[in-house]
Structures are given as C-alpha cells and as structure tokens.
Image 1 (cartoon, rainbow, N blue to C red):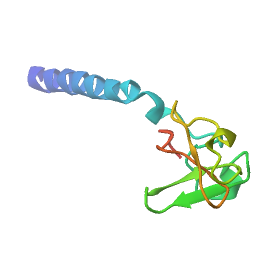
Image 2: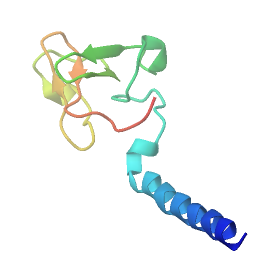
Image 3: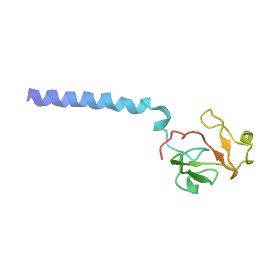
Image 4: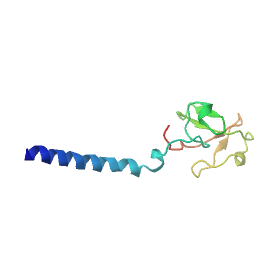
Length: 100
C-alpha cells in the first residue's frame, strides 16, 4: 500500500513539473483572436476579413491590404517590418505564435 501511495505522489509531482513548460512558451499559449498576422484558416477568423495562405512559409495569417512595394503601409509583425508584396498584401515575416 505504501508503494502505491508513493507512486501516486511521484506521478503527481512529474505531472506538475511537466505542466510548467507550457507557461514558459509565452505567445504560443495565446489563442489567436483574429488580429493582424494571427494564424487563421478562413477569412471569418480575421478582424480584417482577409486570411492569406503563404505556401512557401507553411502558414496562413490574417492580413491587410497595402501599397505594393511600399513596406511602410504595413504594420510590424512581432517587431519586424512586414513586406507589402506585389499582390498588395502585408506579408508577415514570421508566424504570430498564437494557437488556433
């Protein structure tokens, strides 16, 4: 009986120790809210009404229109200037880090 109780307590400590790692991930634990550059699957996921898939980067993000070739018309993405591509879409340089 002592062995079973000890194993139960030990397994609880392991679960608590492992559970703490999720909090340390920062933005990865934040749920996407439809903000600019948040991950999305459809336009309905985005406040802007625009969800763009970037195949080469392997993600889809909420975007906004911009002046092609003029990066100053795009807000920063995680502190990095986003690019206004030839299609007039602000393209984030990195994923937002939120979860769908």
